Image (cartoon, rainbow, N blue to C red; front, side, top):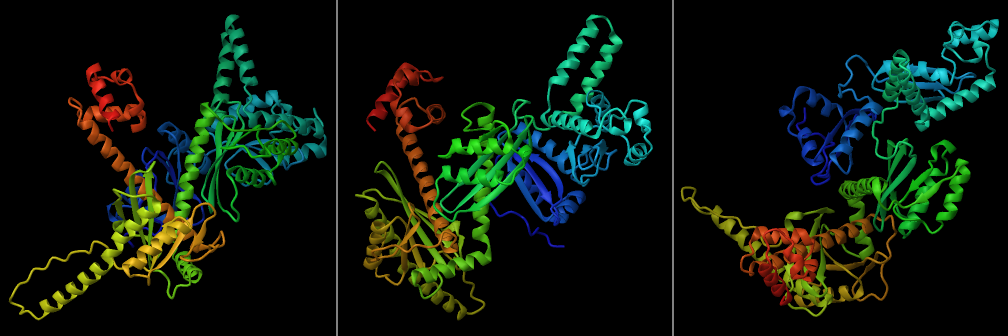
Length: 639
């Protein structure tokens, strides 16, 4: 047995937020559902060496072939979502109801001539409409008994129905008042179908009208001291509450809505579609999109809605559709949705409240899905090979660039200038070889880039000379007698071997500055290109027009990943320097220690906000008096 699972996520793929995860087998069946406050920390326990796992856990992870997760906004949401998924998927490794092999459902056989309501564990009845799963089978039976008194539909078996319709005599359940189908000889097939439609509408919408009526009757009976009837109404209310219990109540119980969280970049987008019916999350649908054209976020929302509802039935379109931004033709889309649904539909952006919170949760999941999609696409060996080959052809290189270095410059209004170098080898990031640079004096981005590349290229020859000297030393050691012990300390060069390709974030000016640095350093053999963010065009030295790669090109995808990683690394380094700088400045104020500095930055949120604050505002913090606040204000004013 291998000691590592083949589907183990890559380091950094699993988020650290709270969420719910699912293990699936090769047939797509959900094997286990769990929740975690920190998904990365929790899931890492499952991917420990197999011999250290409990036997049952080891059997589950070796049976599974994949793991997936959904990020939520809080621990409470993860509990609710876990409960909903355990009911929906009945995972075999989640032991909840020992007396049941699977969870019970209420089903209405709509494909029959006279539909009937049944309790079943079979989810494959043709044309059936399901409600549930439910936690208690007795509650389903009791509620059906109660519901047929208000919506009298058929409950008898198919054999009893056929016999009654052929003989003209009511079926036995109809004779005792427990079947309201045409076989009871009280309604026609058409009338019964209308009652069935009301039954389904009641269950689908979670209509509280019937609950209110029962509550009123219970109170009236109690006021009249008819305690036996009041107890009966109370028991019926409890049964309805059990059947209609919300597995994930996130909005008002009369809310039917679809929420679309979208995360995108220039080439791809991820969509998380949260389906909310009766205030509870009924399902989450995830989609990843590769963009063929450069479209705006509003246009993307337009296409997503058309794709989602183009083939949808009227019952699948909710009353509300919540999106991160409204398309330009929002009014037309609303009208189109209303025509398809046959009722009013509103298309809007959630601004505040629980709907906005849930939309943020959907967007958070979309961001995680997009990051995971990009990471796995870049890590795919076939895609990496094609990307490097396409890059070689597009840039006219003699061989595929096995080592690529990408540079980006970051600053804050011309101050605190820093630069980053990220390294990809064989299409994969080598984070141990990332470097950051400070640029004390510079005139603009091109000058900063020239300085950084000059400093880096100076190490190319030094590292090669060091490698030759090290090889000579090792050769000399081999000639030393075996009885003469020699201790050598192998030093890793500051930079690894020379790159085949340098990539800079920017267009023609940045590429020209980088080309000048290469020429001055005497390394014109290293290929160079720049990637401009506006249209994702590729600029080469001395060329008047850029190279335009197809939007679906793996080479463009790799260059974009390089550029984004360099930008992220530069921003992270700059923020660290800014924080260190301001902490150093504040530490010069007498009486201001590390704890108070941390409290100041946490309270005001940013250095800029703290610099704008008056002494009176600073005094509002615990432990900071008027004299200390005045000293802080005076020190920041000189900064």
